[in-house]
Length: 119
Image (cartoon, rainbow, N blue to C red; front, side, top):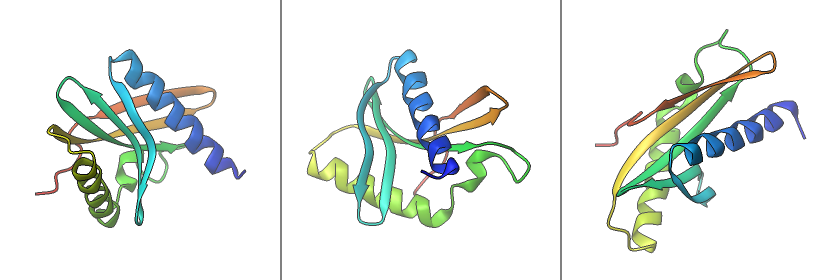
């Protein structure tokens, strides 16, 4: 597996562990619909949190959250709309980003709630 893929998988697991410590329930991981993959679908209280995980080994080229592009957001919204409809959910949906930066052997995690809007 390529090194960046390993870093991404490690980042997703760190994000799941982080969310569990914050009392989120992990509903789905790597949910796919058409061209989109939703990294984590979690729930806390009545909020369904759609979480995009971005992990980087450096911030030399920008912060991890800067790499979520408009087309990806559009695809995520479409996938989540499908997920909510198919599962007949009546919840508030929030889009978050968990940005992770690996610095030597240490990871810094930042949870950005309501990271982008789709209206």
